[in-house]
Amino acid sequence: MTGKIAALILAGGEARRMGGGDKPLLSIGGRPMLAHIIRSLDLPGIAIGANGDPARFAPFGLPVLSDGPFAGQGPLAGVMAGLVWAAGLGAEALLTIPGDTPFVPPGLVAALSPAPACAASNGRAHHLVALWPVTARESLHALLSAPGRRDVHHFAASIGMRRIDFPSGKWDPFMNVNTPEDLTAARTRAGEQGTEGALWP
Image 1 (tube, rainbow, N blue to C red):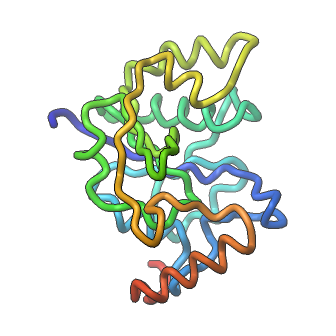
Image 2 (cartoon, helix red, strand yellow):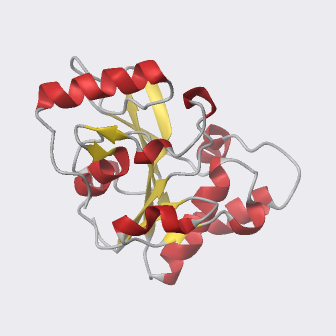
């Protein structure tokens, strides 16, 4: 694995099934989900992708990237913002992780390299747990600038993204928190794994 890698935590979802608000700031095991994700990453360059007032993420001390001119076009707009930011850092690839996926395993960059590649578990691809080549920003910009599909999996396929399978035991390493029931399950899992701790930071 060569080249600089940056990471973007996608925290821009509207959380409709949770009644609104910022899911990544919900507490699991005594810490916000976002803190669990940050601590799983061993990268010097990490940003948060979110629209609205960035001050709500100030305690994490990370750059907050809005979707800019592509706001309202779904998660690919966040990926686009991340790729532009990563290019500015001189990175060759961008790791993306949804902000409602608190149990991602360490070592994702090594497992997914070389880009483009995404994680998969239990027969399902997770196209936003992915390593994107920074050069993909040109084709993504063209896609977002024209009418057409905005499906993440469609764009991923268009750049030849590979699937890397991760083993699942009792718990899926890429479980995400979409509903109150998911939140309860995640808190149960955190208790079983002994991940209770002080609130971030």
